[in-house]
Amino acid sequence: MVTNVTNLSRSGLYDWMAQRVSAVVLAAYFLFLITYLIFHPGISFAEWHGLFSHTAMRIFSLLALVALGVHAWVGMWTISTDYLTPMALGKWATVVRFLFQAVCGIAMFAYFVWGVQILWGV
Image (cartoon, rainbow, N blue to C red; front, side):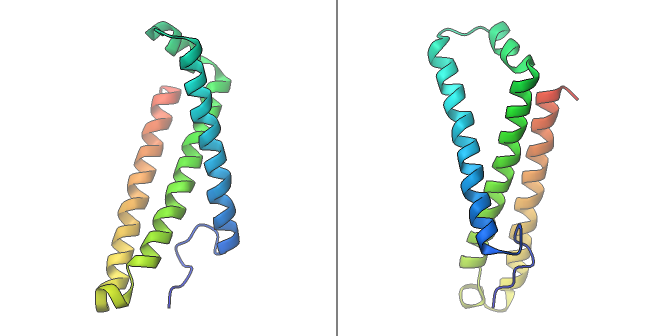
């Protein structure tokens, strides 16, 4: 039996909603960047730096980083609970699932901190 110890909100409905909302945020961010690049062909470093110097763009990018973390966590948690099962892995399933989730969580946290450092110049 899979318990909801490591999922984002302890509710499948809220995880489903978090996945969809984060997907919309990521899509909006991606579409904004693509549109900006289309309307600014041959963009220079100064223009790119100017775009990301605006506080609004930094906040939008930070929101996209948070959305990416939420989206990835819900997805990886779902994969681990669906496929890393006792039927597939035997008695080691719980340990393997925990290690998989721990590695994914640490990687997502490291990428988030790295992204904040890049965005805000910390």
